[in-house]
Each structure stands twice: as structure tokens, then as C-alpha cells.
Image (cartoon, rainbow, N blue to C red):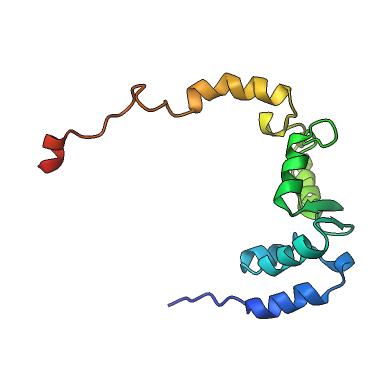
Length: 154
């Protein structure tokens, strides 16, 4: 039997509250893997809801941790953009991948991940173009029907 043992959430919470805010890196992958990230977000929401991480494996980045702030950023397409991406790529791994591609004669792919990274109004144009094909039909508009009572009784 293979049982994974998670680090104590209390110990992780102690660390999350003991570190100076400037050293707190919410993107540390081990916290997500061990499900011990929650004390970090708890502290950030309370003490530094818009947190800047200056140095990480992903470079510098901002963490927005409160709902109202997230919604303000997500709906303000003039001041905040996702056109340069929506992920935090690991810089070292990305450099290794690019070097490997170049070693076999391929140029690394640049560009966007599709319309998910587009800002309004371009995002809605593309989303509306694919929605009729990908969205489920509204209730009563066809599609699979539930089995009849006679069939269900069998």
C-alpha cells in the first residue's frame, strides 16, 4: 500500500505567517502539490491582498487574492491585459525546452494561446463565433432526451 503523507497544515501555516511578506512566494509548487497553500492565501488576503513577488522561478509577478480585486482586474481591459499570456512559465524549464527545440532544428513557438488570452472586444468576437458549436443546447432545444418511464422501468 502506498500512502502519501501530507506535511502538517499547521507547520505550513506557521511558515506562511512567519516569513516576511517580501519573501512569501505564493507560486511555490510544493505547496500546491501538498495542498498546503491555503495559509499563504489566508495571510495574503488579510495583510497584502495585491502581493508582488519580486523573485521566483517564474520571474516577478503580482498575486491578486480577494474576489472584488480579482473581478476589478478581470473586467478592466484598458489597464490589465492577458495578451502576453495567462500563465507563469518556469523560466529555466522554458529555456531548456527552447534549447532542445533549436537543437533539432525547430524554432520555439511564439504567440498566443488562442482567444482565451485576448482582451475585449476581440475576445468576445472569437468566443461568440465558437459558442454555438461548443455550448450545450438550451433545455428543450433538442439533444438527447431522458429515457421514457416505460424504458426506465425495465
